[in-house]
Image (cartoon, rainbow over all chains, first blue to last red; front, side, top):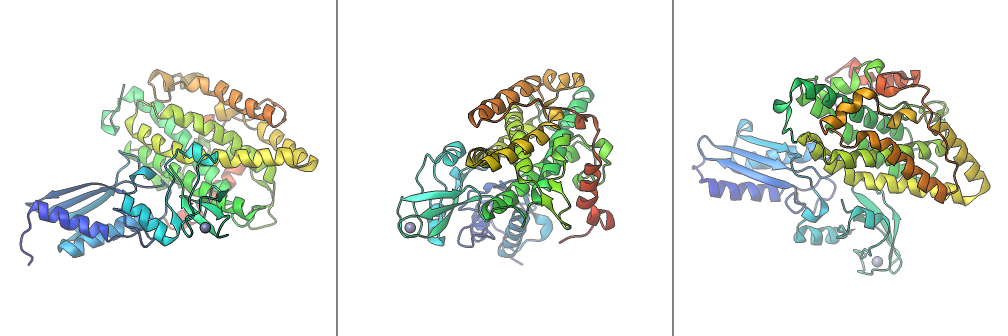
Length: 171
Length: 269
Ligand SMILES: [Zn+2]
C-alpha cells in the first residue's frame, strides 16, 4: 500500500513518468521534449489520472505505442491500476513542430537529426531556409527529398562533411 | 456558426455533415490505397519513400474522418472503412482508377505519368477543400482540417516537382506526361463537381465556398499547366462517384483492402 499523495506531488510524478517515455523511433527524445503532452489532470479522491496527448502526424503508426507506453509508465511509477489512468489523444489542439522544447531540439541534434527549421512548410519546400548539418554544423546543406524514412522527416545532404542526414520537417 | 460536437447536431444539419464526411473519408481511403501500391515499384527510390509517407498520411486522414462518423453514430470506423458496398462510396472515380495494367502482385505495368497527374489533380483539390474546411461550422472537422492541411503542403510540392521534371526533361517524358494527363482528365469531372443538393454544404457553412472550389481548382491547375506548357483539357465525368456510381475497379480495391477484415474482424498485426 503506497502512502496517499497530494495532487501536486502526483502531477509531478506523472510528468516525471512521461519524461521517461521515448519516441519509439528516436529513443533519445521523450514525448515531453516533443511537446506532445497537452494536459495532465489529477483527482485525489478517488485517485485518478487523465492525460491528454496531441498526435504529431495523424497517420503516425507510433501513436498507439506511445499512448501504451505512457499508460504503463504512469501505472508502474505511481502504483495505480489500469482503470485509474486514462491516456487519450486529443485533436482539440493541433501539434506543430514549434511545440518541441529547446531541450528536445538539442536531443534531436545529439541523435544526428536536424531539428525542424523555424519556417512554414511552404517556405521549407521552396528551399527558403538553411538547415544546419547535425554532424558538423555547416549550413552548406541541400534538401534532397522532402520525404524521408518516416512521414515527419526529410532528407538532406551536407556538402561540407558529405554526410546525408535527416531533418524533422516543419508542420 | 459553430457546432461543438455530435451532441449539438440537429437532423437537418446531420445529413449534409455526414455527406461531407463520407466524401472526405472515401477520397482519402482510396487514394491512400493507390499510393501504397507503388511501394517497391516506384521508378526512383525517393519517389518510393515519398509514396510510403503519402499513403500513410492519407490513410491517417481517412481514419480521422471515419472516427468523426463513428462519433455521429454511423457505425464503427473499421466497419465503415471495410464493409460498405461500392454503391455507398462517395470517393471521386478518378481516385479508384488503377495505376496501370496488371496488379500489384501480378505483372504490375504501372503508369507513372498517370499516377503523378492523378495525385497532382487530387492534391490541388484537397488543399483547397481543406483550406475551406478550416472555417467549417463543425468544430471537430475544423480541427482535423487544421492539422491535415499542413501535411498536404508536402504532398502537393512533391507532385509539382515530378510534373515539372517530366514536362521539361525530354520529348519522351513530355509525351508520356501528356498521355497520363489526358487519361486523368478523362475521369476528373466528379472530383470537383458540386451537386445541387450540396448547396447545403454552404448553407450550413460545412464547407464554406464549396461551389466555388471547382473554378478555383481549374484556375490553379491551368496556371501551372500553362507554366509547364501542358494542354488545358476538359475534366470529363463519365461516372459520378459523389453519387455512388463507380467503376468495377473500386470493387477490386475494396476486396483487396478488406480481405483480412472480412475473414476475421478481430485480426491484429
Ligand atoms: Zn556536415
